[in-house]
Image (cartoon, rainbow, N blue to C red):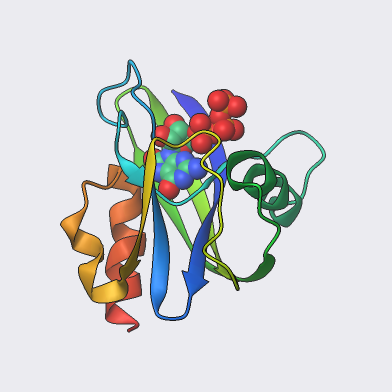
Length: 131
Ligand SMILES: Nc1nc2c([nH]c(=O)n2[C@@H]2O[C@H](COP(=O)(O)OP(=O)(O)OP(=O)(O)O)[C@@H](O)[C@H]2O)c(=O)[nH]1
């Protein structure tokens, strides 16, 4: 089974977290789902370098990347995902949606109102517990 390793940012502005909606995809289980921005680690990159590059590409932002949060492993039908999440404080809501089709800033208690990619659910649950 194919393995995919990604990094993802939990972008925090005050008491709100950025939730970003993926574009339509042929894989219906991730199509138009909400996620934390990020992407695959390229050869030679550290996790934080990969996340910095992805945040610049996807949102045109360059926030400070703080502590790693949790790593989730999830078996999707076509691949096994390992996702490393990082907490990032951001001092502006001024982002460009270069790849996502929508975004919303939500308080932790509101996060479960969205249709998240399955791999993200443990991260969302921990964010709500840690409130
Ligand atoms: N970035 C990100 N990817 C996630 C999350 N949850 C989740 O299941 N994924 C999955 O992890 C994979 C990461 O893909 P990506 O499309 O964001 O990465 P990328 O930009 O490097 O992709 P590409 O250059 O191959 O198009 C996708 O299959 C995506 O569905 C998440 O919260 N953030």
